[in-house]
Image 1 (cartoon, helix red, strand yellow):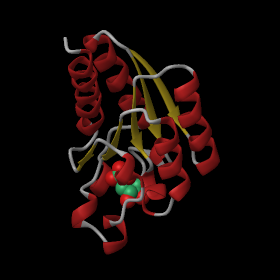
Image 2 (spheres, rainbow, N blue to C red):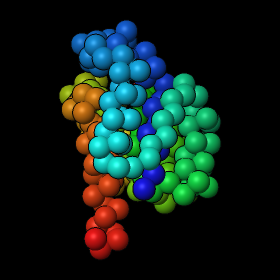
Image 3 (cartoon, protein in one colour):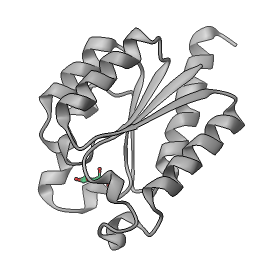
Length: 149
Ligand code: DQA
């Protein structure tokens, strides 16, 4: 089982960026947490972060061509603007979970709109960085259910 964990713009600034919304944990702390959780689940994980929309689209396609079983994605602000990311997830038909560190529904109105959500099996929002590990667990359980194991 292999998961891709993708992060969009400004998530490389975790720990520095608006700690009241995103906490004090750094991006490298987050990456370590994800790697440890993958180890505990006994799965492979590939981590990717980009500040560029097209690079995220390319990575979603790569997930397809390398046979990934699931995608965890925090698209950052592209959540609220990007039809290209929605179309990419639809194109690959890989079970995908949308994650937000902050609770996007209790912030500005423009954050309530998510284009990618329509192509995702679930959204986890407002659980801090635990949302990523919860999404990974959910994708593993979904894959096991699909295998009938
Ligand atoms: C975010 C929420 C988005 O609205 C924002 O643009 C981000 C981070 C979150 O993780 O809470 O960059 O996706």
